[in-house]
Structure formats: structure tokens, C-alpha cells
Length: 583
Image (cartoon, rainbow, N blue to C red):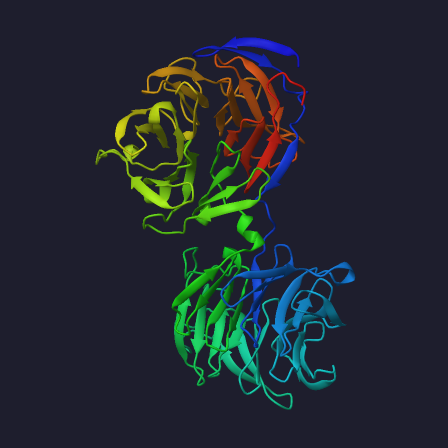
């Protein structure tokens, strides 16, 4: 690297070193950026209540026993490998039928995933009755056909309308009558090929009960009493209709809490012989099981999409190098190993002890205790190393006429001597490990991220006017002593080396060097991370190529020369040589 020039800033001196020719750090791992996909369809084995789920993020079929324990995962192999599995059904012998839209085929597998047969049908939906007759909704020709077990067509239903669409679903009642949902309609397919309208879930205003209007069926199921269950994609709920077509029950609603659903992309529904309603809660990456009246029985996880993060904001590492992420829009904390393998997760949307609302910061103590900035609930929560709730605390008494004093924690960091530091908009609060207030201090600006060093100094990135009078600057990094005494304010707005343009994340390495991510960007190079020594001399600058164009929201260093950063909706691990070392 070549030296450019030296300039004075408010406190300290920066040696600006050109990053124009800096090499990008090596990306060693990345996770959380998974393509959309979750449990998108579900079927129950009539012999033993094992259930099979299409996990569209892989894609694969997952098999669970009746207790919700994962038994196997398979996706076929060779020419039978699944491409875009969409529907699943189980026959009386336990064979698994999968409609694969990507291959435009229907395949039959053993329960362990061995290929049995292939049918050349582009089926958008599939169902099987107790005599092993197979019903396939063929989107190519817009019709449903019933085949016997030898593959001979027995009945054909021509559909004009309704038109088969991506959310088309098939289900059978105890009398072997087939029901088809497509667009906003449910029809019954009677013997002889007649199509009988049953429900219009988006009727003209005033022609149906308000609870039904505006529903879009994503999946159908019927129980032993021939009651019809509709997974309402538009309203994220389950509707149960009696045999007379009248709405009897409705439950769910959009959310991530237990019992809530997110069917933005669709999902699946099936009812066991005992009346347990299984819902493939696609965008929440889980299966939820309910009674026939909508009471939650349990929740089954284990899907690939569980590693997918939604708007993660906070990140830290522990002594073993494991990574903890405040998965903000999923309202949880997730623990990964350094390679991205999911180790643990805890937290649901809510206000009770251990529940979270938009957590934005996370820190880990030397004993494994985990502290979470639970911003939506205006509190700090402490968990033990296994994720069990320990205690919580809120901010000190607030001035009723000062909205800026509101305790809205969005980052947290631990210092030596038992200090806990919390960043809340324009203030830093200091507590002990039990939540006892030890003081606070204000700065002018909008705090973004928080970090501490081994001496207990506190660093804050800010995106507003500096508290220090000269020179004026929009974007700053502040340094405070452990008790809040101002020590320095660094940064002059700009994208040149050593300057800061919208600084976001900050981290401090073992030598006291300060890493700052900002929005300075070069085409093909990605955002920038600059490294300064403790006196703010620029040591190094790197552009994060092949990642998101927006700068990291949070960064953390481990003891092995690796930098973990939240970029976009995922975590990226970089090989991070010490300043001046060759990458």
C-alpha cells in the first residue's frame, strides 16, 4: 500500500493509506442467505401417522414420526433427484408420491427415498384415496385425472374454469370425493366427471360471512367427519368448514409466535386419523400441530430454512469461536459454529420472560451467559449458556418530557470488571451484570453500533453531528472511558482513505486496533472496512468483494484471525490477517 497524505481531525491524527489497490479478504464461509423456502407441503402415512414434509429450501423430503422426531431426509439421486418438489401424498403401502414441477414428473419412492416408479405428468397437486387411486391435477391440460393403482385413467374432470394455478390443492374425504382448491374457489369433483362449486372464498361484498371474505386457499384437508380445512394463504390462518359448508372455526394469524402462521409463500395442511391438524408453516420453517378446534399441540422444527436469517442486526462470538446472532425479524437469538452449522436457537415473538421483540444486540460473557438487547420490549434479557431465561432489566427512570431518553436498546457490549454497556439511540447506559444502573452519558447523534476494548474503553459509531466543535463532521467514531468520560472523536465525512461515510459497525481486536465498516464503495469491490491503531492512524483498508453493497450491520473478531460480519440477511466469515500482513 502507498501513503497518500496526512490530515488532522478533532482528536488524534489519521495517516491515510490508499485502499484503491487493497486486496479483498478471503470469504471462508457464509450462511443465512438461503433462498426462500420452507416446509411447503405435508402428508401423513395412514398406517402409523408418520408425516412427510417437502423442505423446499434444499429441496428434499423429510420424514418425521408421530412424535415429531426426524427420521430421515432424502432428495433422490441421479436422474431421480428432486428439482422443484411441490406436492406429496402417501399410499396404503407407505410409498411416497412426489410431484416435481421442475422435472414435470410424478415420482414414487420408498419411505427411505429409493425410487420405485416415474409418471410423466406435470402435476400441480396430488392426492391418494384409501384404495390407492391417485388423483393428479395436470396444469399442462388444466384437468384432474384419477388413476387406479395400475396407472389406468378411471375418471377425468375438465376444468374450465377454474384454472389450475400454483396454489392449487387436492384433498379427499372419507367417501372418496375429491376437493380441489384453486385461486379463490373450492370445488368438489364428483363421480362421472362433474365439477360442483362448494366455496367462493372471495365472493362479492355482502354475499358471505366476513370471516371468509378475502381468503385464498393454499392447501386443503378433510377429517374423518368430512369437515373441510382450508389453509388461507392470504390471511395466514386455518379455516374449518362443516359438512354444510358453514364456517365453524378459524385460527392462526400472521406472526412468528407459537400458534401464529406465515403462509406468504403458501404451505400445507393434513389431518391424521386421530384428528390432529398438521400445518406446514412455510415461512416460519416449522410444522405446527393443532387440535380440530385450533388448540396448539406442539411445534416441530428441523428444517433447512431455520438457518435463514431475517434482518439480523447484532452479532458476537464466544471463547470457542461460536457465533451468536440477534435474528431481529425472526425475534430470536441463533447460535452457529464458525462454519455456519446451527447449534441452538431460542426466543419467540412476545413480551413474556424469554420472549423477544426485534432483538438488535447480543453479547456473551466468559461464563457463557448471553445478554440480549430486546429493543421491542425496551429491556435487556439475560440467558444462561443453554438459552434458559435468567433475568431481565429495563432502563433507569426516564424523564417524562424527554423522548430521546427513552430506553430503546439496540446494541450491547460487555467490558471488564463486570460492566454491561447498552446503546440506546443518543445515550450509552452502564450496568453491572445483574442490571444495577451505574450511570449513563449522552452524545449528539444517532448511535449505530457499540464495542469495548480490553481496557474497558467504549466505542460508538454515530451518523449525526459531532458533539465536538471542530472540525464539523456528520459521521464519527466516539471513544469513551469506562465511566463515560469523552476521550476522542474521530472521522471526517468522505469516501477517501481514512474518512468515514455512514459508519455502521465497529469492532476492536486484541491489540486495540479499531475496525470500522462504512458505506464507501467501489464498483466490483463492495463496502469498506478500515483498520486504525488505538491513536487513529490508518493501518489498513479492505473492500469486501462478493458480498452485499451495503456495509456490515455488525462485526466481531475471534481469536483466530477471523472476522464475522452481518452483511445483508446473512453472516459472512472472512479470513482477516493482521494489518500489514499478506492475505
